[in-house]
Amino acid sequence: MASDAARSEPVRLSAGDPAQGALSTGRVTLVLGGEAVDFELTVPAGPASIEDLLPIFHGLSDLMGDRAIARATASGETLSCKAGCGACCRQLVPVSASEALALAHLVAAMPQPRQAQVRARFDAVLGALAEAGLLDRLSDEGDLRGLGMDYFWLGLACPFLEDESCSIHPDRPTSCREYLVTSPAAACAAPTPTTIDLLPLDGDPSRALLKAEAVIGWSPLVLALTLEDRAGPSARELPGPELLGELLRGL
Image (cartoon, rainbow, N blue to C red; front, side):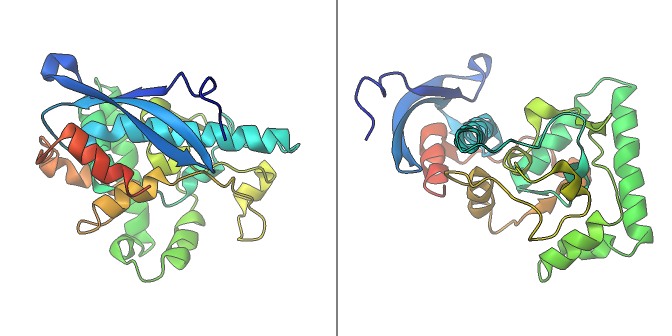
């Protein structure tokens, strides 16, 4: 059990813009890997959307990833993931509806000509999927493993991949943050269930987001811009602290 002294400094995560409205700060203790970890969380005080709270979940994913890497390093293992190795960026990446909308907003805010270049990459991927007969299958949740492998073997790079590195690294989805392997990088070019060693995390923020939006369901990252017509302000139905509490219960 951690001592009071060791737990005196909480992990601080924040979401929301004080210029857009009042913020509320509170403390919560989460049990991660059997250890009590104190957090100081700041969120919008008024009605908020899940999209508004994504920075909190990005921070949680990063923290859990860092803890998993530290454990692996202590055991003599080495993380294979690094800039320049973009094999995993050719996978079918599941994102929550809020994360898809956030990506649509991110692209819409890009200056030209960068925005046009990114949109062209999305169009190219969707065109290749249509030609391969996979586009209509992206909404089929019946055989996700089969769909995922068929998608991977097409070798389609994520539209945000540049020079084999993520060009939106600070804003990447939770599922990308949580994909950490210690197996050889070469194995990621031809993955199988027995050749990829994923680091176990203390929690699953990406799944918590998907559970919170179970009625809407998940979306492949490559379909994010198809939500552009609906990418206006996200629905804000609950005060930020109350919404965050519901989301944290899904970890």
